[in-house]
Structure formats: C-alpha cells, structure tokens
Amino acid sequence: MLGWLSGRGAGERRVRRELARIADDTWRAVWSSLPFLWGLSPRQIDALRHRAAWVLASKTYTGVRGLEVTGAIRLSVAVQAALPIVELSPSLYEGWLEIVLYPGGFMIPRRQVDENGVVHEYLQPASGEAWDGGPVVLSWEDSGPGAPRGANVVIHEFAHKLDLYGGEADGMPSLHAHSDIRPREWRRVLDATMDQFDGMLDAADDAAQGGEACVAGTSRRGALPLDPYAATDEAEFFAVSSEAFFVDPAPLARAFPRWYGLLARYYRQDPLGRLPPIGQP
Ligand SMILES: [Zn+2]
Image (cartoon, rainbow, N blue to C red; front, side, top):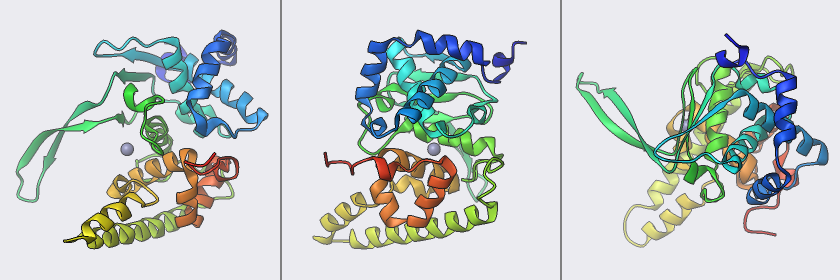
C-alpha cells in the first residue's frame, strides 16, 4: 500500500507539487478571510504554506450532504490545520487519512450507560469530531470565515489529533520533541488551570442565580477566558485552549499566564505578541 494511504504523510516531492498548485488568488482569498494569520512573519508564512501543502498532499477530502469541496474550501481547511504545526513536525498529523466536511452542523450518535446500568442512546449536535486513528469531521459553516468570533473548529479538532498522537486523549500532546517541557510540568499546570477555570464557572453560575443578577451572571459567563465547554475534560480543555491561543489569545494569557506560556513553548509560537485583541484594529 502507498505510504500516504496508510496515513503516513506525503513525500517532499508530492508536497512541492501541491505547493506549486496553490493559485495566488485562492491563497489571497483564504488569507484575507482568516485575520488570526495576519501577524505571522514572512518565514512563518512560508512554513504555513508548506504545511498546508503537506495537508493537501497527505489527506483526502470528502464532502457529504451535497457539499462541493472547492479548491478554496480545501485550502482554507489545510491552512487552518497547518497553523498549529507551523513550528512543529507535520508527522504529528500522521496515522489517519480523511477529512470529512459537512455543509453545517451534524449529529453524532452517542451511547452512555448510567450508574443504574441503563443505556442511553441519543444524538449529539456537533460542529467537529476527531476520531482516534480515523477522520477529522468538520462542519464547513463553522470552519470557514463564518465561524463564531474567537472559536475555530479546525484548530480544535487538529489539537485533538496532536493530543491523540501522544497516546490517549488526555490533554497532553506528545512531548518527545520538547526536551524543555516535562510531562509532569504539563500535567501540573493543566490541572491547576482547569481547577481555576472550574472556579470561574462556579462563580459565574452563582452570579447567575435569580433576579437581576441573572443578567450580570450571563454576561460574566460570556466574559470567561474560554468557552465553558473546555471544562468537559482535559482533552477538551487543551482543544478549546488551543483555539483561543491562536485566534483570541489575550483573554487566555491574561487569565492563565502559566498555561498560555506552556502552550507557547509547546506550539513554539506567541500569538499574543503578533495579534491585536479581537475588536481592536
Ligand atoms: Zn473537542
């Protein structure tokens, strides 16, 4: 079987061919639709293009529910997926092959057994999913320029892939290439930050109890540094933090400077230093 079919990345020749195929006008359109890229240095932009070409050459794209996967959609997803690995090896995205795109949100069948042994089967709405050893599934509506501010489902799902490459989905990606980060340090900072975020959520919920405080509580919850979904577990905390890190880093860095610093050492990027806060020119 060809290497790339088994999920190994494409060779340099195929990546170069893909790189040459990126049309200038498509690149410009994608670039201008993703403002969180604008602070990258010329060297990082070159690396981003190369990594995006690696994604295009190494992954298959499948549009479902009638979505026609155009060249601009392929490139947009590849570029957003490439951002977290601009300073890392693309091999971290190896071991799986397919990117599946829905036009909008989709339903994931779930099965859960409660403490009484009762099986609950239900459909959960989703905008993205990353299977262990399988595809990344994305809602294009939530992946393109129309995504909610500060959120990025492509970065979210590819952060899960980085996490899974390190073994379980436990919020700790592979640190093999990071001799400056000890797993124990990662775990300690992650746990402490999650505790702190849980406290913020509790405070926001308390403030939301009853009367006029409800309005204040709602806005406090909206002012949290991360989407409350981050509190689900360690894997979601890492994925949601990675979205914020690249797209809207200021609130994350302000609330959790040690966690931001650790993410900056892991990704070897400092988006805070290159991006104005969202809402400011
Ligand atoms: Zn997730």
